[in-house]
Length: 296
Length: 80
Ligand code: HEM
Ligand code: HEM
Ligand code: SF4
Ligand code: SF4
Ligand code: SF4
Image (cartoon, rainbow over all chains, first blue to last red; front, side):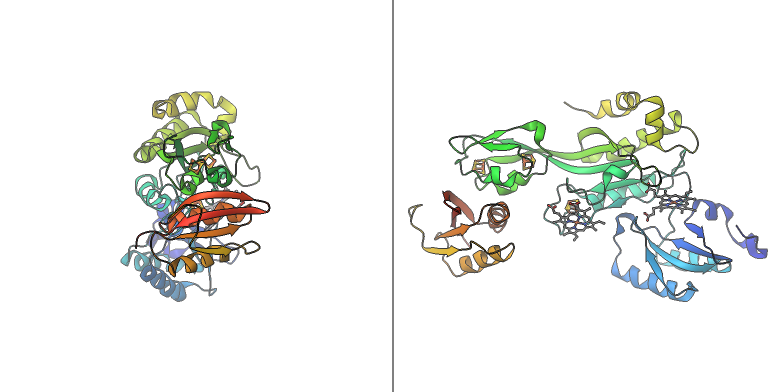
């Protein structure tokens, strides 16, 4: 990092924990904004544009893979005024280093018919409660509304994906076979009379059968989150381990808190949580953290 | 209205998603509540998507019939 005579003006803690990333160009930095779930209110977006226009010495922004707006080419001398101007309309900076990052989320169910759980709402909530929490390495969280998993929960330190448990009642069923057609997983096979035989082990809890059934013979018994942990991208990607099914919506924040406490206790500096699992085993984590949240 | 006699028919074999649904929707709009529309569909994606969209619009699939190269679904128009 370049030494600067004005460094006294810059909050160095903010530099280290905040989203300021050194560029190839001397004294220029990328400033990464905090945009949980990638949703930007339009007025804010315009104001960000105005600030970016004023301070980017390279004339562009970049949309990061974790849904943030990055202002490219900000001079170190401009940090203070930039941060102040962003703060005036409530825009803060993302985090870097060994701590909880801004959660990402799919567009979600307000406008996407596939959504089961409200990923956007959770991302905002979790950002408020856990953003910036220090731990051994970066810690990435994402939310997908349904099993299509647009927010790639498999590649996160902790990923939450919406699921619904289908329940069938014989009475209303007319044997139309539409649920068999609707299920892409082969979890429903129509019997002689057209009525469904359900193979739970194949079910991914997408709820397509519920949406298809004309008589509401299939209904949602419960909704919740499938939880995965230990995923990462990077040079040595690791697919997340499946931790549990049907975590209730109101337990997500608690689950994250307990996971971070476990990670901080059992992990090592510089080690992602997936590496901790590989070193000390997953069972301890499941037992200690997930077990108390499992209801059946 | 008997389930087997449709008031209107539409054959959407060979018509892709989501055009098949749009055509179904337009046809239903010209019909009265309680009337039945017979829709002929290819198996596969159309059979996965069209009945579900019909339900989302509030109408009801009252019967499904397999035919040689697809399906006939009978849709009862919702009360408006
Ligand atoms: C101040 C510095 C840094 C900040 C603020 C930062 C922040 C981030 C963010 C926000 C992402 C997600 C990017 C996106 O998908 O939009 C990311 C991805 C990544 N960063 Fe960094 N990073 C920093 C430094 C580093 C360094 C020094 C390394 C490697 C030595 C690194 C390795 C990676 C890798 C491997 C990924 C993809 C990994 C994954 O998603 O699991 N980062 N970083
Ligand atoms: C309005 C927004 C969006 C809509 C309506 C939408 C819709 C869909 C639909 C209908 C599918 C897949 C259907 C299927 O395979 O059954 C899909 C798949 C997917 N979408 Fe989106 N999507 C949206 C935004 C996004 C965003 C923002 C991302 C990622 C950043 C994304 C990533 C994906 C991925 C990874 C898949 C799975 C593709 C695959 O591997 O099969 N989508 N999306
Ligand atoms: S994960 Fe599901 S709910 Fe979220 S954007 Fe993708 S398809 Fe829609
Ligand atoms: S929830 Fe999805 S996978 Fe499970 S039976 Fe229904 S359609 Fe099939
Ligand atoms: S879609 Fe509903 S009515 Fe038709 S066979 Fe399946 S459960 Fe029965």
